[in-house]
Image 1 (tube, rainbow, N blue to C red):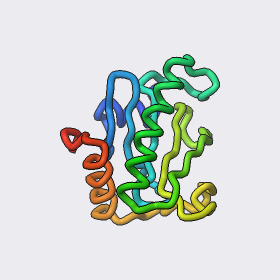
Image 2 (image 1 turned 60 degrees about the horizontal axis):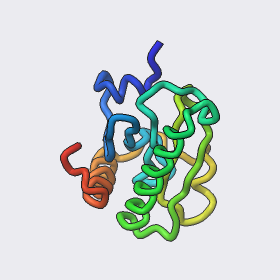
Image 3 (image 1 turned 45 degrees about the vertical axis):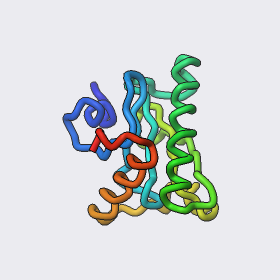
Image 4 (image 1 turned 90 degrees about the vertical axis):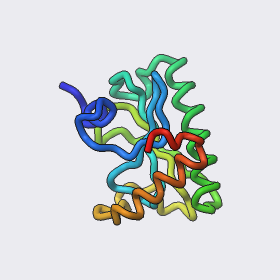
Length: 136
């Protein structure tokens, strides 16, 4: 059974993509702790990050670092937060988000009803910073 992330990756469900290559994608989460909250996900379905091939895990982290730099630049954030939880969807993923303080590290603080226009704007900002505007 495909995960919800695989369905987004395959275009079966909508997603606000900000990065994509043959092994890894990054798109905005639908319940952000802050606008710009992005998930970095392997195309391959791997449940736990500890089960990922080391080369794939390294590539995911390279992409997460690029997304983190774009988050800091795009949202004038003092830090880019980085979090691995993995309980929401059984498909390894890294949360990268603008961090003003430690509150973003608690996923209980997500916005369950984000403004779609602000989400689109956040995705545009990140694509511009990443040079991936062809994904829009």
